[in-house]
Length: 366
Image (cartoon, rainbow, N blue to C red; front, top):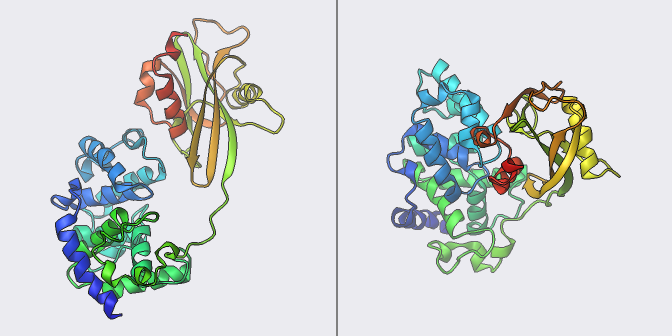
């Protein structure tokens, strides 16, 4: 263990001179730290920065966030994905306003009790914002410690993760948790990468057991990779009387409360065109014709790879060309007919937003 303890001062010295200039590090405001940590869940830090800047400009204080409507928060979050994070952030802000006098609590357990916050985020916020001596173990930390200390168990399974957490606590220098936790994460993000780690440039290379044993590529030990499920989906952009039909998803389930163009899975033996006509009939009771194929959008999330077949639709039959008909919704809570230029005001899942961006102004002249 002596090498393990020797690695901490090397790590802290490196962080003192090499840390990234991230906006929430300038004054470590607790609200800013919390928002950044929620954004950084499942998102690389460099990608977080522009979204963080935009979000903080829209909701500069915890009170402003707590008073916001969910649609506004989702719109400000658009592009980051995993929208349950935004919903939980809003729910937590409202809970803080109601139960903590509008101030983010400093106690680990109180932070952990907020919506959307697990062990890692609670530890990160408590240590970085409030200098509490708590650990924050994310994938970067697991990888660094698994390599430096040669942990030979799968780190994402309970026994292996418990070993990493125990080691992180043992190595934590009292009073230095803010720098210690950030330094571990920074090292994992910048140098001790999953692939092509920069071992020659690593400040702790001299005490890294995996490098000494020439098993860097074998640490951390990984669990079995989950299977990827392909999904074939059809969606339709229905245009009538110069307006576009959109609907708001139900409050629960994937992409809850976000706006979308109706659609669904393409069934076995079914064409994309037939699927979208069927889906519109089932979800809205509209009878539609397929006017044109717009695009094929490919998008991945969690363990799914989606191929989204997108079509331009017109109302079929005896619909009045000057009247916007009302749907009979079965898979949504609300619907709107909006001008094409207004689509930017609504939060859409990434696949649909990619479609809107790809079409740009071309669709609206049809």
